[in-house]
Amino acid sequence: MWPEGIHKELSAAGVRQIGYVPDAGHKRLIELCQADKKMRAVVLSTEEEGIGLAAGAWLGGQKSVLLMQSSGVGNVINVLGMVRECRFPLVTLVTMRGEQGEFNPWQVPMGQATRPVLESMGTVVHAPATEAEIVPTVNAALRLAYNSYASVAVLIPQRVIGIKSFQDQTSR
Image (cartoon, rainbow, N blue to C red):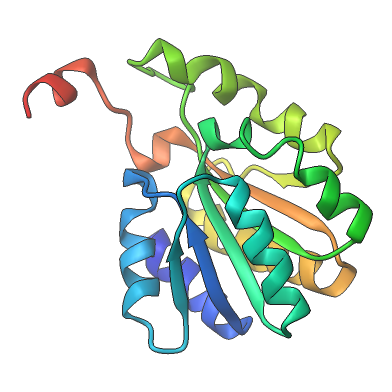
C-alpha cells in the first residue's frame, strides 16, 4: 500500500522529522513514522507550525516532511513566502478533499484551489493520478526538494484515500 511505500522512501531519503496535523488520510503513514525509531513524528496544532519545523530541521542538519490535508494549505499561504525567500527544501504530502464525491461542502473551495495556491507561492506541485504513481512521485519530490532547495508538494488524490459520505459521518 502507498503509506508503507512512502515510509520506505522517507527512510531511504534520510527524513528524520515528520510534522503533521492529525488526518484520517495520513493515518497509516503517521503510525509508521511514529513507530520508526529513526524518525520523530511531531503533532502540530496548525499547519503553519510545520513550515517552522521544516526550517528548523534544515538549519539543524535534518530533513523533514510536512503532512496535511488540502484544507490546511489555506493555512500556510503566508508562511510559504518564507520558504520561497529563504530557499530551504520543503516537502509537503497533501491528502486531497473537495474532489470526487465530496460530502462536506466546506472542503470543496480549498480542495479546488490547492494546486493553484501552492503554485502561486512557488511550490512545485506533483499530482499522481493513481495509487501506483504515488510512491515514485514522492521519491521524485524528495530528490527535487533536497537537491535544489525547492518547495515541492505531492497531492494524494481523494479517490485513493477514500471518498467519505455523510452516512459515514452520522453512523458514528
